[in-house]
Length: 223
Ligand code: PRP
Ligand code: ZN
Ligand code: MG
Image (cartoon, rainbow, N blue to C red):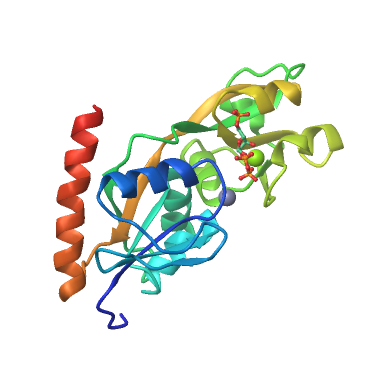
């Protein structure tokens, strides 16, 4: 791990977690000099800086030691833990943050006669979460073809490129708009604070401890 004397937190550059994540850090007493369209935000009061990145990149950045912490969906963290090389997958959920609640679910075309996971036997499933879907299928001994797509997963059945999908569902609006219905929940997700299993033993560790204390206070007040 690199030696740095400032703590670095990765968070989503633009998306559903961006605003609540920024808000949470503000409530923890942190403030940053750069605006949101910059990728790096220098912390003004405390030695804590922000890196604004794609959420999918956050676990890898922590595993590489580029960042010390990340605010990321459990879905992204779990997928990383299942698919990264074992020596890299050593990340843990330090705290659950109580926002960005959604679920990772299987959905099928409304007209499909779905009778349970066995119905997926021999079918194809489009998803951005091949690790989580593969694991779920394997535990049920179902053979299905997993097709990995980076986005717009919900359109795959209409295009004829997959029979079913597995994607995040929050309001359910995207499923309805694409004539799909949710059948199985694989994972209940929300934003979490992710970090390495082994916390840094230098000044960053002290700052991290202080940050966790403040975070616990903020989370408690909200509950
Ligand atoms: C997420 C997710 C679903 C949608 C679900 O996509 O991938 O497509 O939101 O939300 P809903 O149930 O409220 O419709 P998002 O638009 O955040 O972006 P992404 O797929 O590009 O990550
Ligand atoms: Zn993403
Ligand atoms: Mg989407």
